[in-house]
Image (tube, rainbow, N blue to C red; front, side, top):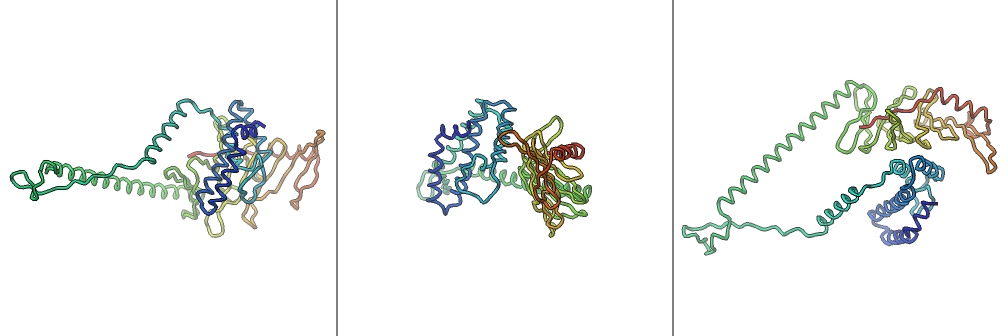
Length: 367
């Protein structure tokens, strides 16, 4: 309710139709589409921030749980989504759990940056001037009678030539340093390949990280992700999978994740995303065990495994507890044919007992 009241207070019921009208008029412009999508995302993030800014950490977790509970199943992209949990749920949960009220100095710095950018991009550059050098005679007059005092002297010309030479020298040194960094990176890659004959090797490149998949010392392919993405290598059977997540959190000295994308290697030897895992809060990190990957919440356990026929991550086990309006519980599980059938409280509790014995939280590494 706080989230929806924030929409009304901000007047989003008028701004969003206006944005949609602009999109309808400029439907052929891909930049307008991108702007509208980001605009819708910003509306939701702003209302989330308004709703949680006075909440304590536990209340923010409850808000995130409510958002996940109301989240919509993925479908084709809709231009004007209306559901509370349909826009960027993953990113919104991350922002909510990591919310920190901006300090005065942060706001002041942001305003200063906006002013500087505006000055740089909204003003015209000063027109460049051209220096003309004229030959002069012994009397100090130019060949065409112009006073030599108004033209560049020989000392100024020499100074300019020295400046140009210094700039060229600096550029040459910069190229040499770039070549040295490139050679060092190639040497480090060869070293990593020698020490890791098979597996995923992270290579830092500016603000991004590339995870290279090595097979018997040769590069089979690579995956490039955000610079802040954490990763984990998990062996499921005989297959080593790569897990990438920007939804990590600290639990003491451990780094766990609530959701991640899972990558394997396709038939042509190149990496391919084979699925994703999503739990429902920091109390239930993504886990792995002999039975496969575990994704849990307060009332369900799901087990995912690698389907050797399709190469995809599929749901192979599920135990769920549901309550009706009167508080009566019912239980469901996944049978051997992959169908949801009614279960019992004993089977549900037995599934949790097996989970506690088998499941281990996946430890993620940050670059």
